[in-house]
Image (cartoon, rainbow, N blue to C red):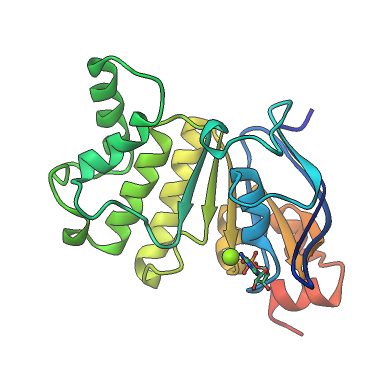
Length: 239
Ligand code: ADP
Ligand code: MG
């Protein structure tokens, strides 16, 4: 059975029909990209899984459980945004530890171990006492990543996390995110409008046009066999 299922999701904002009967399934341990131009509904779909947006109709199922109306704080979903949303008055270590405070109480030793492990993963040694403003964009995004993975969520959601990072650093972070996702075996959904980023990172790409999925497949299939003019144009820039 699929690990995540979106079943016939509809969402309107006033007259704007943003998600049009979207169904898709995601397998455990995969990194799946929602790719498409700005405004096509990628973030809105992601937010229905995080519980930040309620669908008008349809169901969201995670690990066999219908979570459609569930409290977002109890969904066990980690989310990383373009704007890193770190607490400016907390150090790197405090920001990372904050994720754990929302969870059930852990022994201090376990907390310290987990913090050490994630700091290792995102390579932020020596920055534990820094404040976010003293870090580069890429470092801040790695703090946000560490804060999410420390809670060991069932799924990690990335909403254009690298769009504000300069091009040179972006590639390194793409590879780092992929490596961490792989090593943890965690299921991840990655939203982007950048086809190269989707090609590099994804096990499966779901290409969106306004409110619906245009085509789904492995990167190589999307690239070599786009099925519509829209897909060809978007993936290959050759329309
Ligand atoms: P994407 O992430 O693909 O750029 P979004 O999911 O953010 O697209 O938005 C899809 C559409 O829904 C856009 O037309 C956007 O303006 C609209 N929209 C998103 N959130 C809201 C909201 N909270 N209220 C009204 N309209 C919204
Ligand atoms: Mg978006």
